[in-house]
Image (tube, helix red, strand yellow):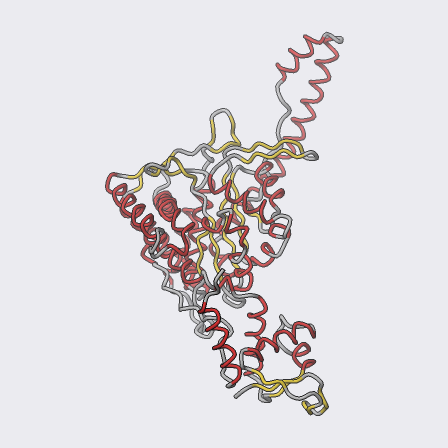
Length: 499
């Protein structure tokens, strides 16, 4: 194969830069995030603004949180019917990228407050329900034994008596709706033993992505399970130890908040990208508000807006889930349909997205996401319509327009961030070391200083040496001769910041 001359040109340029002491950036800086389209939140806009007024966190973070909470609340009530696509569940997978100190946990607490209160209510009811279940189970066992004794060994009488008695009572669902750090097996168990809908919500995404759910052994299974739930397909599993699991009519949405270094790991994973999980994710990575959050008292209207939001989510969560008549643990929600005007809008966006993912199209780099953009828009429109009116059975043009605007924003964010996932952890450690070094008064530093007092991610000699070597290779550091005096002693490995 003939080598690409551009590769040799880039290699020669890098060598020339090093020879002349020129500094090269460690990685391409991201363009600034676009403003989240607040108007596109429709009936959720004021709730998102109230959360921001309460926390002063980035607006996109607040918008994601209320939109994800609303999705969690409506997914047991409605599906959506999209032209040519059939019925789709109203599940959503949301990811928000923000560094430590951006008040992710505070936003989560405010946006999920009604969910936490419902869980607390269910916990209060669970004791009495468990007492009744244990009594019913004991009575069933006693009645079963009585049937067997009366039949005196007659198989037919025993069979008829047990059939008349009916199945053993089932325990009540556990009171937990949210789960933060499940393995795929734990999530299946959560949906089997709890209510037929749930949410994976956490403000500490590093625990989830760095834990058992996304380790080398589990991440493909986790990604495939999230795909299954997003698509609304039954969970089908057969295991030697745990036996057969068949769970139709389950829903599970997610909102995972994480730092950039964790997002790099998630969105840089070729396996998750290849199986299509990342195409199902709605991603934001807003600019920081740190340094601008001076003390202020939220306006009086803030409480009223949050009260309205809490009341609506409580109403949705306490409504009985729509299930099959013959199976109370199998969701079977009716589907919202598009009005004629809304259908015209949606079809136009569908065709726009299809052209955009073709060769030369603006969404070609995010082809997998772009192929699902119209479905994302339809689902988001249905969430907004159901939140606005829990009894609605149609989606009007105004909500479809909101869904389209949101889908376009998520596509723009995916395009903006697509290159960031290729930044290795080693480069990020080098960048952290450079920032730390530039804040020091002394331009000279030796190896032990780096891993003893430097950035938290660099706490070993090997990591410190690698980060310094990367900065040296990019022209930011100059290695000092072995034995140079640094910090009052002769040092074997030391560097100087290039001015």
